[in-house]
Amino acid sequence: MFSSTSSVLSSYTTFAASAMLARTVLKEVQNITGQFIPQKLQDKILSKLGGLFQNSSSQLTVFIDEYNGFTINEIYQASVTYLSTRINPSIEQLKVSKGPREKSLSVTINKGQKIVDEFQGMQLMWEFISTETQKSYTDYEDNSRSVETSEHKSIRLSFHKRYKEKVLSNYLPFVVDKSKAIEEENKVVKLYALGNFSGDCSGSPWGSVNFDHPSTFDTLAMDPLLKKDLIADLNRFVSRRKFYRRVGKAWKRGYLLYGPPGTGKSSLIAAMANYLKFDIYDMELTSLRSNSELRRLLVSTANRSILVIEDIDCSIELENRQCGGYNQSDSQITLSGLLNFIDGLWSSTGDERIIVFTSNYKDKLDPALLRPGRMDMHIHMSHLTPCGFDTLAYNYHRIRSHSLSTEIKQLITMVEVSPAEVAEELMKSEDVDIAFNGLVEFLRWKKHMKLNEHKNEEKIGINQQETETQEIEEKDEKKVVKKKKKKRAERGKGKK
Ligand SMILES: Nc1ncnc2c1ncn2[C@@H]1O[C@H](COP(=O)(O)OP(=O)(O)OP(=O)(O)O)[C@@H](O)[C@H]1O
Ligand SMILES: [Mg+2]
Image 1: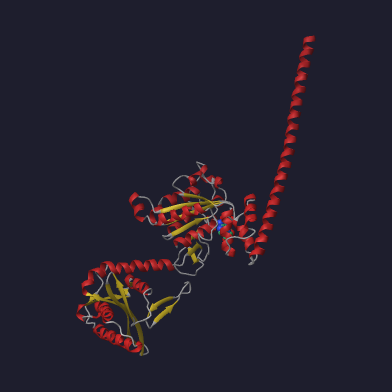
Image 2 (image 1 turned 90 degrees about the vertical axis):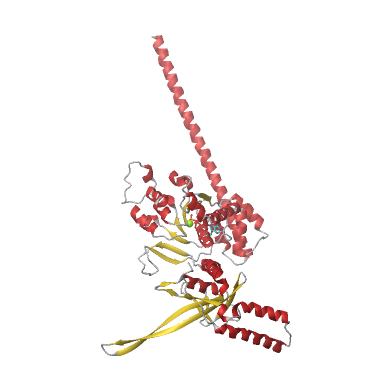
């Protein structure tokens, strides 16, 4: 990969000058501080610098241009990213920029600036270079002349000749890997939905916005063991590229999230995306007309992404699958169309894909969807538990315990309350006492309603029982009357 990088032996005389400069600086430091720097320490400093500055003819310089022909040079980009983490106090000029959709500033080194880096005992000197070239054009129609200036950017990497192999096969790959990790860390997660609302001209059916959902695994109230299992499952999944290749399985994973409304299914998807830094594709099945449209959309999703189909039980005609002879042509969208595609083409074209289905009712789902191997993990998002309450209390009020906590937790075990409902109450005031008191009131009211419901149910139950026994008695009565009539009739015959 790197052998083609142009390497030029440069008579880099500035290095020798820099060595002299380093000696002068050491002397100056002694003069200013009035403190003698021990000779040993001086030697050590100079010998460290010596790897770079000793003899100009022992230096090798690698030039890394911004462009490789018309395409961007990935090593250049990687070096810029990597060097932005190596900025030290000796740097005098920096460049700062920020794209309209980026979260943070990007700080890079200005042209002419140098950075010394160390790697496995080697000293390496990086320098940013920029040259401007001007071309003049003559417009022969009106004989006017115009000048066009273009900038040529490159980076110069210098080190001792004896490290050539090590730099090309260890150091530069290290720089590339490191820059990927940095980019991954700074990556802005995107949310894609159908329709082009970002105004780009790519022709993609998906429009995207920056995904700025604050949900993380820390803020999510869910069974701690389940949360731990899920995080471990995600970690295993993303680290198993080779494994999936070896066993011949498509590198994808399916999760089914089910549970009542407001229990955090959508929040969990957001937490997964934020954790993995995967983009989300939100697929609204009800707005699609055919299997072929679905296929087109799935093909145009990118790797390292989460495809989300919410409320799967409501968004697809489940009966389609069950009706054997039903016309499952391309003119409509069917569950089998979706499943076939997920199992087949899509899974073999993409890498590192996650698919998430959500549903409020697991038992309403087609068994085909629940078949082993389809949805690898079924995750039940339940009503709030006392432990989940602790998470919410800490999220919203940064509080680990409160005099009302015990009562709140007791009430939570008595009523069925969703994390969303409790979150709503906790947000009503920034004063924790007011918010917790409000929550207690709310939970007591829920408990009261539940008890009333029970009583009503019991009443209905008793009434029902009464009517049932009455009916039975009536039936029995009728039977008895019938029997009696029969007997009477028989007796009448006998008399005759
Ligand atoms: N488990 C949870 N942990 C933390 N906050 C939660 C949790 N569940 C719900 N919330 C809060 O309630 C809001 C709504 O929850 P969310 O949309 O994730 O629920 P859902 O299960 O997807 O509901 P639905 O079935 O209606 O789609 C969230 O924005 C969040 O503030
Ligand atoms: Mg939801």
